[in-house]
Amino acid sequence: MWQKVIQIFKIADLRKKVIFVLGVFVVSRILANIPVPGIDVSRLRGFFEGNQLFGLLNIFTGGAMSNFSIAMLGLGPYITALIIMQLLTMIFPALEAMYKEEGEAGRRKFNQYARLLTIPLAALQSYAMISILKSQQVIGVLTTFQLSITILTITAGTVFLMWLGELISEKGIGNGVSLLIFAGIVAGFPSSFRQTLAVWDPSKIPSYLGFAVIAVVVIVGVVIITEGRRNIPVSYAKRVRGNKMYGGVSTYLPMNVNPAGVIPIIFAISIMLLPGMVGSFFANSGTAWVAKAATFLSTALSPQSIVYSVAYFILVLLFTYFYTAVTFDPKNISENLQKMGGFIPGIRPGKPTTDFLNFIVNRVLLVGAVFLGLIAIAPNVVQGATGITTFTVGGTSILIVVAVVLETIRQIDSQLTMREYEGL
Image 1 (cartoon, one colour):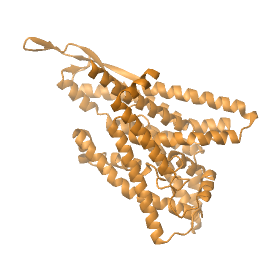
Image 2 (tube, rainbow, N blue to C red):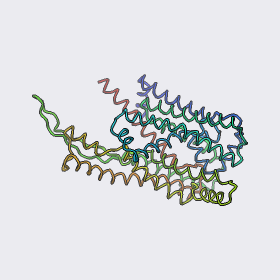
Image 3 (cartoon, helix red, strand yellow):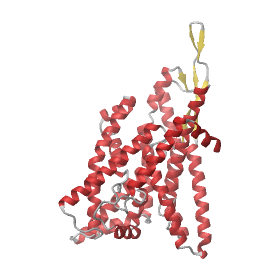
Image 4 (cartoon, rainbow, N blue to C red):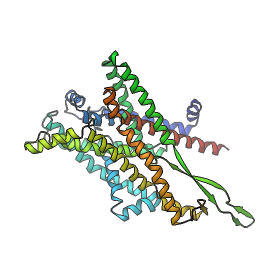
């Protein structure tokens, strides 16, 4: 491992990319600590510490929300825009064709539409957040001008973060959105440790040890599932061109147990937090039945409730299958194999190959989706069993951190391998 680190910093181009990504992390943390003018930050922090739902949101923004910073929404609006766009591919065939059939140009256009959709979503979410905090009497009354400037500032912060994520992705050191979320989660770890030390109770040492053991098990499980693959054998027919013979080799088609990575978790969390936010928004409504319904919704879908865990588990499963269906196209793979003279032994080319790939991916994906769902709800079970609540996100944050680290290491390894071949 240390040899790879040394090798990274020996290669000038790769060293510049890594330093650039670290610099972007610094910029994102600075944005998370620049508050919007005219806000009582101390009252805000007290509110987020006492509200579990918004405390969860705050962790995924790296504390930016409790600071009411210009980047308080994080990348939430952009993730929501991506979810909406990918759902629309199931409704509009032209959008699906653009994403799947037009290659890299089509994906760039698709991502551009998602970026444009992010702007109104960010404005809407910033207005909703301000309204929620006003209804909870956390912030005072804002004039129309102050409200407009605040919404514009928060929206600009989200767009700027989105741009930073795109810059990271262009460097080829990993997915920029995932890395920025990773940076926000890691930034919250020191405060969680400080909080744990502040409420240290020697009688809870067995609980702390149990929590540590479960965390190690979660990390090992995530690594195994993330790195797990089902290899499908592929053979290539021999072809004679002139005086040379091509093909006649056997290889395999790797199929990941969890091809969707950490994306289903991020999507599911974005959806699960929405009802709680709506409930908090209408909790102090003047209409009695609306306030009662909103309070019931907030209570039923609080992060510690059984309903929340069940719904979270189901959403992770659905998003795992959905995201894989969008990104993995067995028909396209079958056609490419046929064009290159490849075939799966015992399976006829064409539709039989497509059906076989669908069958395999659905079986393999079931294991990955169920494991991902169990890991996602494990923090609630662990917190209920050990009574440790200082690590608010628990296993979900570990899951995201481990998955992002593995993906980034894979990207860096590919960069190193490419340069080794160039040297040869």
